[in-house]
Length: 357
Image (cartoon, rainbow, N blue to C red; front, side):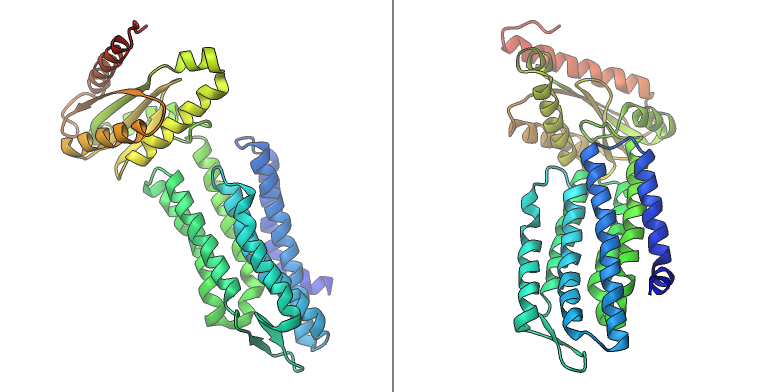
């Protein structure tokens, strides 16, 4: 029996082992995130064991009662694992994200006795009950929420959207392939999820080298690479600087300052569109690089930033420099955007009766 499990799940075991080893030697993520990743690995491994025994009993045609319990666990575990992925990868997700999955699990367990979701007859044939598609609906719900959250957290550029699309493919396969391949798809579901998560985690490591750990926007290293590699395509530089960060740090503490920076960075990311990337280049200094866009798009970007920031308790100074792509030296554009931004900042402090330093 152990030999059969290993033969059927060797690829899964190897991927999960590699995933665990990579987590052990990676130091880009918070301990909480790493701990949740380990929980995901364990959950997928345990689910693979449950699936193996369910199909093993089905093959030899015995223990239908045990099979029913194992099926209830499998139907419950799938949305729970997707919820765990959302809890791990989504920012600021609370434990409440598990509520729909837990309700689904309760209904699946009740189905052992009344067949409301599924039942097995004496010959071991599966019959769907009145809520027979509930597990698929739960998986679809979590998959949609997860993809939406990941897109919101991204810079909406192809380098981030493509890995999200790849991860989405595994969820879509979990919803569609069971109806095409039949119940046998369940035997490859765990491997599919393990591979998708491992690939996406590799992507997160790559992104961690380019992203600011506090705010999630691109970091100074990525900014330097962008102005060096793509300078001919850059048509606008938008400089943004937070007002009053020093006062917040001095009187409310650095945790409050970090919260302010995170909030503003989220405003900037929500304001950007295609070909507009946000970078944190210093303490409270941000730069948005716009490539191959018209000046009207840059003005609309500034308006969106002002509108989004106005909905918070913080303020910022903004300045931009525009020139058709490649028509102006990048250093000159940086200097111009900074000059306008600092003039804007000085004006803000003047209205507050303070001198900008």
